[in-house]
Amino acid sequence: MSVGHLRYQPEVGVLLRRMQTAPFSQRQRGVFLGTLPDGYGFSFNFEEPSGVKLLHPILYRWLKEVGNLSQLSSASPEIRSAVAELSRNPHSAQKAARLTVWLHVINGCNFACHYCYIPHLSRFVSREEIEKHSVGRENINPVLSNLIGYCRAEGIPDLHITFAGGEPTLNLPLVEAFCREALERNNGVRITFGMISNGSFDSDELAPLVKRYDISISLSADGFEDSHDRIRFELSGRQKVGSWKKLSKNVDLLVGLGIFPYFLYTVTPSNYRQISEFASYAHGKRLGFRLSLVRTRIAPTSDIQVAMAEELSRMYRVFAETLDPELPILRYASFAEWNLYRKKYAPCTSCRKYFAIDASGNVASCQMRMDRTYGNVVSEQFSAIVSRVRSDPANATLSNPEVRQGACIKCEFFHVCASGCPQHNLQATGVMDHPSPWCHTYGTVLPEYIRAVARQLQRAVYHRKR
Amino acid sequence: MEKEIIVENEIIVSQPSEPQILAPMVLDWADLTEVDRTADEDCKDCD
Image 1 (spheres, chains in turn orange, yellow):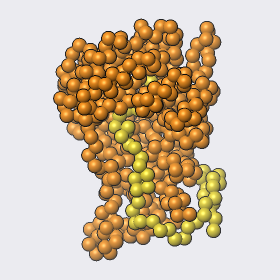
Image 2 (cartoon, rainbow over the protein chains, first blue to last red):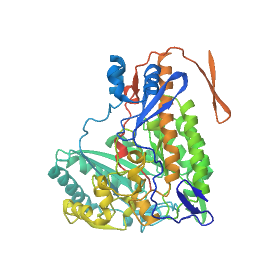
Image 3 (cartoon, each protein chain N blue to C red):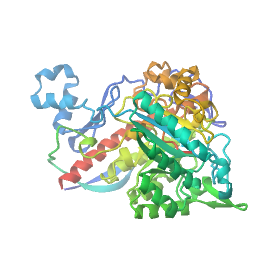
Image 4 (cartoon, rainbow over the protein chains, first blue to last red):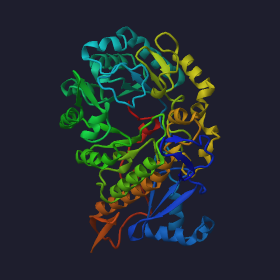
């Protein structure tokens, strides 16, 4: 059986053709035009992503009839001005450089999600054991001083610290100590905070911290109600206790306090049919989410990929027609690391502007590779560690993604998809610069996603004019 | 006049058809709302 250009053995779900040579979409990369109701159209420039553009019927008709821009000089001034607008990127202004660090403050979790890739993680940890799995208090100052010093030396004005784990809310006093010291010692560097949690916290303890330090909260979800509980549960004795009830209660408490968490939903073969229900739940509370395809070593079977791609595509077609325009898909139903305003060569800035630090202070290229560290930020200059990360040939694809050579660079969708997580590709295929095991799903969903963004924008215009 | 939007053989919603919309020639979401994309630079996959 083949799916596009990939060949699978469905019964074992193993990708056989590891050195895939054909990109998903072999159309020439450029400006794509699509049709919307009532004569409207939309465009998206796959070569220079600058956002999805809703096209007035007059412009769309001209673009379809003329077909090429060499006749632009004979067009009306209005058309010429509009065509120039197609390539305007409203987010092109140079943003201040930022260093992002995932700080795994605790290497212990009260859950044991089967797909968790954090190495040496202590699972089903009880709260009594927390301190021994946490960053030592004596290391807070050295870690922060090192990161802040690096930012100052490199002229980086912003430092973003994402508290992760394990489960960081198991040791909120430690998180608070980090935040307090960071702001006391920031030395002119603007420091912001995020946190990724499984939602099992005590809101009375978390909320004041979130408010005091303006921490952006992301909550992990792996389904809706029962499907979420099958993956995310605590143990009470030998009894599995699902976490959805507590998560949803905490969501309501946080929202009631004016704190709006963002969901991170990991899509798996066992929960993709519940995404729509989950979406209704989240959108009903005016909360957004990002969908990420699970990163397991074994590639998904072709049957699963086709089914998941169809369901995701269907969902975005429904969002296109029904999702409240006050909840833009770009933020409230985002997908993978897609950014329609950024020309990507890699999906993330790992090895360039983003690193992960474990509870002992060891630095990795990202949280997917805590098994491979390059130095310890407690005892060594961060700049030296960063140099080591970037000069490792194994990280070439991430350190200098603009010189990639793999099949993806020929794909029409490359600058949005950027091949998916390179570490996942490495695990599944042995090569980082390689199409994702989820290539079929990404390639099928992306056009639907773009059209949905456009259609919702059109509905936003209708809504605004009433 | 109402128009039915059919998605996947199901009638999803009825929406009024707007014969004349006063929209600019080209519109981007950023013209309507500030959608923070900063976070997309980094992998947001959770543990």
